[in-house]
Image (cartoon, rainbow, N blue to C red; front, side, top):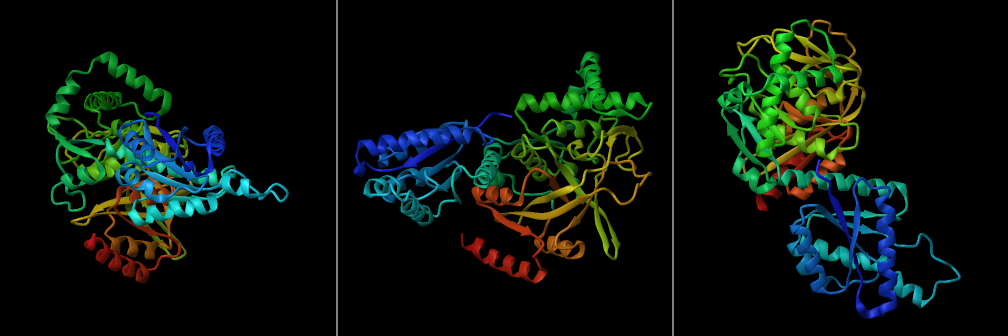
Length: 487
């Protein structure tokens, strides 16, 4: 992943004299340096902004600096809002308004008018907050003392969501062939998505992939097989099938890297010239951070790559997923998530196994794939859908568990979970909102981060939680329809 940074822009004014401004700058530098030690990305102190021109210039610079993933503003003193208008109106990067102050406590013996002139964040940040609201700019407001761990955690979480925006704005998706025929939810307006989210979604013929596979050398295949041996257990003696997957993976990676693509899709209905549907190949590419979507689902492919980037330096556990079947025993309701082949091994509880089994569809050879059980833990599932005229991001809280059944004859990777608020109510809510059967499952990324990301991208966000009811969701969706039609 490219290394990003965030800029710390502190508000003040000339009214208080040069000594105050020097103190503000020194403190801002100190705060940035100390926060750098605990935040997931560097926080660079840029300027104590005192004029319209300074603010406009730093916002313009942020817009054009690819390493800058967002700005964090704070007003150490009172900073008149009108001088922020031009810069904030033009700002195209994510913005966090950090409402804090340098000192934790009011110093009983020391507090005088000099102290009050210097430490005016309490009303400086309110003035700053007004202009954000007045301009209707997407922003994250975080309040609290800058040295508190919970506050630092929230800033770090926002940073990761902002990185998701940067990744989205440069996202390129390589589609090998088209979508599965007659499927509705994998369709979407690619022009609108590029305008809104930045994604470039284009198609490469399967023949292009076959040609690239023919050009892969035996040395490259052997090197890929060695990488498989390092990460996975070989639980098959059908090595020709595994070798073919290695050839597919090398070819797909070469094509994507040459085009700067972070995500890809394919479909079992378009495998012309190929002996196997990529299974192990797709899974191992996802483990490296690439996004994937089955049946030509380019939206979930890009979202998988974005969540993997947002969860970087976590446990890496974000994966293409599909609700496959339910366990509807009263009091033991679970959803079983899987796919034909392609679930990322980042969600595995134990070391995955390479196995070869018949696929049953696609009319090709038996493909090699990774087989494993998913790990327990709190997670979310996310679905991006095209509502016609706008995009909707649906997020549901879930609790992954060790599968309650061994399922010895199911030769695919699988994850089992309990959905909020319950399986049946959760399903009703998901279907009511129009959620797709393909999702991204993530242990790393939180619902709050997805809400932040949706807010930054200016798209609708729907969150299904332990408190959601079908009635409340229907009401919220009705109001959202009205609001988004007015935008």
